[in-house]
Image (cartoon, rainbow, N blue to C red; front, side, top):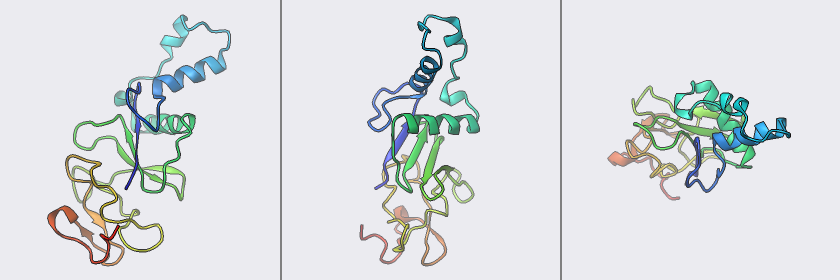
Length: 168
């Protein structure tokens, strides 16, 4: 099953990223300014905006920082959820361990977003069970998935299963 790494402004309950964006900013600020007291206007004036108000590029920069500072080690196909549970599936991304980067959801098949084609369902090395992302989304279970065997999109929640891929 995929693990979810939530990237939040302030962390209230995240077990794998206990420091959020504001915590990481504060840590960076005091490392760069060891004589700072924390009461300075400069500290407040330079705080990043809420993760929900950032453009995608800035969100990704902060997501990388939060993962690094928390020494989080997402595995290939894990979910990086920027901003936490939000409208539809906003903020859901996937960790590409092969290229060490965060990949956004695709939306060309399902408008709520779905798992990108590069995270294929199948039995091969680096492929996933069709149940790998179960329970991540309340909306569409991040379906459809790409089948490496049939080279087609399919929807397991609608009873459309690929042969021999649900054994995990």
